Amino acid sequence: MDIPTQLQTSLSTTTTPLPSLTWLQTLCTPRTPTTPLPPLASLLATARTRLLASDLTTPGLLDARWASAHALPANLAATHAATRESKLAADVVVQVLDLEDVSRSRWEQAEGLEALARGEGTRGREVVRLPPAGDGGDGQDGEGDRGDGNGGDGGGAGPQPQGAGGSSKNSTHKLVVQDCKGQKVTAIELKRVERLAVGKTFIGEKILLRAGTVVARGVVLLDPAQCVVLGGKVEAWHRAWVDGRLERLREAVGAERRA
Image (tube, rainbow, N blue to C red; front, top):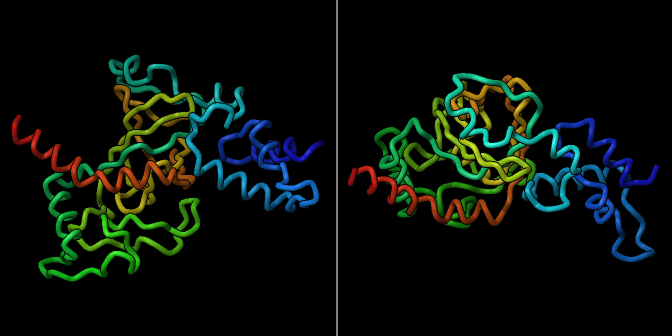
C-alpha cells in the first residue's frame, strides 16, 4: 500500500474530513528527489493540520465519495423551514463563517469593542487598562492565535475583560456554518458548547455534527453530546472577520434603530 493510501486509510478512522488521494499525493511529494519523507505519524499530523486550516469547499481537497455522504441535506434551510424537527442522517463536518453572542445586545458588544480600542475594558464597575497591541493581543477584540492551529488551548487570546466583546460562560451563540458542498445554514446552541465563544472560536474552524443532530425549522441545534469542535482556522477569513466586526455591529445597531 503506497503512503497516500495509508494516510487516507488512517484518516478515515478519525473525525477529520477525508482528503482526496490527489491532495495527499501532493502532501507526500518531497521538495527534492533526495529529501526523505517524514515518518507516517508526522505526515498524518501535517495532513490533519492543513485540512483544518483549509476551506472545505476547495476543489479536489476532499474525497468525492466522502463529501457526497457527509454533506448537509440539499436546501436544508428552505426544505426544512416548515419541519418542526428532523435529524441528520450522517456525520457532517462544517466550517464556521460567522459567530454572534445573541445573549448580549449588539449595542453592548459594540461599546465593548470601542472601549477595547481605547485600551480600556471593564471588570464589574471597575475600568481597567489593557495591554497595548502586541503585548499578547491584536488590538482588536482579543482574537489571538491559540498557538497550535488546531483549536487547542495554547498561548494567545486569554479571557477577555467583561464588556470587551468576548463571550461569557452563560452566553448563547448563533453561527453561520458551511458544509463541504458550500451550503450555508444557521446553527444555534441548544445547550452550551464550551469551545464556542466570541474571542475563542476562529472563523474557518471546523465542527463535527454527529448523525442524530437535531434540525428545527431549518436551523441546526448545537448540543455538546452531538457537536465536536475539531479546531482549525482559515487565517484570511478570521482576520477579515475581526477587522470588520465593530463596523458590522454598528450597522446592525443603526438598522435596529431605524426599524
